[in-house]
View 1 (tube, rainbow, N blue to C red):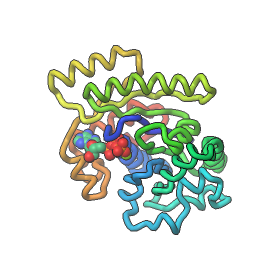
View 2: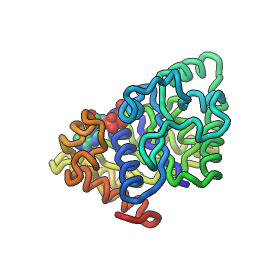
View 3: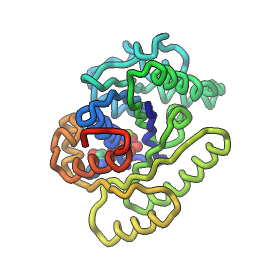
Length: 261
Ligand SMILES: Nc1ncnc2c1ncn2[C@@H]1O[C@H](COP(=O)(O)OP(=O)(O)OP(=O)(O)O)[C@@H](O)[C@H]1O
Ligand SMILES: [Mg+2]
């Protein structure tokens, strides 16, 4: 099993859209078994897949982090469709951030999430676990970074985003020095379009020393439309530019280990 964190300190760069479409391609085209983990108190991923879910009535990531989850790791999951399960997020994740500052209660979160990933790995029934992180180093995002094998960093082609990426790469290095075994799989350019400023920015990014995926994800209105329809764009509009790009990107990133693309 490979555990992948979608992370960027910057908001609105495509972390959730990338997590959703990566999961969809892996499940439908590659017949992989995927668990998505919503690490964001905004709960965009959870409301996308399960808008009616009562997060007070089912286990969520907050219970896993605080050690109040069901003993069997898989009993904490909410099924989405064959091959895809969700560990929901909840606004309780914001409470955990507050309390970790007030009383230092967050020191075990990383270890607990690592244990959760370890149980999934041992079980052998899951091929990919994908963490959709919140913008910023929240408790849940840091725990996801500690539990993940790879970090994918979606990034928008604009100056704020690129400058933020450089500082985040430094912060990830800091975590690595603190003993967190982070592997940056690469930055993924989302909302790409062919304009002078974007192409210049892309050149700058590719010469920055941070690994960047060759494949970019083009901007298309089909993506926001797909979020209204609550479908991955790869299902909502399979031939749209973003869908084609996401499939090519998955092949570039995981091509060696998966079939069907
Ligand atoms: N390829 C694309 N083309 C057009 N719009 C896109 C594309 N990718 C993402 N978007 C849009 O960008 C916005 C942000 O995407 P998303 O919610 O995935 O970002 P995020 O990084 O998860 O945000 P947050 O940090 O708030 O969690 C959404 O409105 C989404 O529809
Ligand atoms: Mg998001």
